[in-house]
Each structure stands twice: as structure tokens, then as C-alpha cells.
Length: 263
Ligand SMILES: [Zn+2]
Image (cartoon, protein in one colour):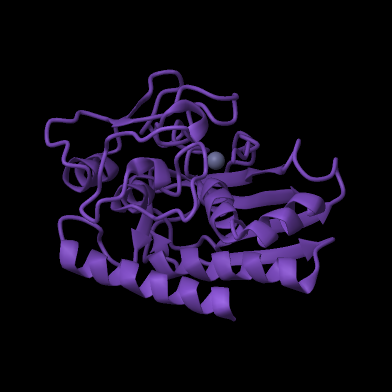
């Protein structure tokens, strides 16, 4: 399944003062969604707040405000919606999203809930709204069209996690629609084959949460986690080079996901 993010340039720029780190929080507002649909957004908020805890470059940011909305667009399939930052600030050498949108066709939400894929889709789209693939250029970790992500933390994680010790970049998707190219980790176009990149738990990278095509169940890699360090976020636990805490973190996430599924 493919979801095209709306890649909106950060428009509102202002300077924030330096100092102690501020906590990272996501504040959701809902329009046109049922309580069940809203619960998936709330779960994804908890998921990301559980791994991202603060801002390296700012003491004053009040968190990320996301307007989550549903509307009838074109039935099941076709246009799923759009997601991404709509405003942000430069602070401490980083570009941060402060506002964003996640807009869905309600027919597709219900279809994805029924298919069991909506948890992964919402986590994926919320990651774009936080900044994955949407503020890479502003943070100097990626040049559009290059296919080469060079942020130091994610690259270090990638070398270890996918046994690519000589890598000088993390490969970025250049195929697919404009919303897919340049804002995801690379995989076989349309998600139709294995990448051959295997993590320590034997999982091919095609199933990673932030590749361009969703293969459920998706997993969150240390590489993706570390990419948020590259764009100025403080993580709950450092993904590399401390494999033991990272394994514990993932185990914790799996428990949470399982509980939600049965809840
Ligand atoms: Zn995406």
C-alpha cells in the first residue's frame, strides 16, 4: 500500500532562544473522525512520544500540533489523504515542525482498520508530520534527487543494523510518485520484492515502517529512530551503539501494539 504525503515546505520561520531542552509532545485535534478512528491517532501519538522525548536545539518549543481529520473523498482506494508539516521554526541549528496535518478519506480509514494496517499507516504518516522525509533538506541530511541520506546518526545505525559497514549513505527511495520519492528509505518499487538488507532479527528492510510502500506488519528500525536524532530530537533510548537497550525498547513496543490490537 502506498500513501502519498503532502510535502509542504516549512513556511513560518522564527527564532527560538537556546537553553534547557523542552519536552516533545504531540497535541492532536480531531475533525470528522469517529471515536474508534480517533483512537488510532491517539495510539500513534503515544508511540512516538514514547521514543522521542525532547528537542536538542530548543528550550521553548511547545510541541507539535497536528490537525487530524477525516472526510469522504473518493471511497475505498484512490486518494487516501495527505500528511505533513504545515509550519515550523529554526532553532539551535535545526528545522522543527511545529504544526502539521493528517487528512484521510474516511472510507479508506475504515478499510485499513478492517485490514489491520491502520496502526502502521498512522505511525508512518505521523513520522512524516514530525519530520521524517519532510524536513530532511532543511536539516542538511539529504539533497533531493541524490538518493543518499547522509545524517550521521542514521548512517551509523544503518551500518550496524543492516550489516553495511562500508556504507557512506542510507539509500533513499527515488521511485514512485513525487510523494514517495525522496522521503522514504529505498526498497524495490511498489514493495514487490525483498531488499536483501536484513536486520539482526532476520527482517528484510522492505518491512521497515518508513519505506515507501507498506508491508505489514511493519517494524521500526534503529536506523529510522536515529534519523530523528539527525533532525534534532532527543530519543528515550539511544539506538546505537547500545543494542541491548534497543532490543528492550522494541520488545516494549511489541507489547503495547499487542495490547492495542486486543483492546
Ligand atoms: Zn510515506
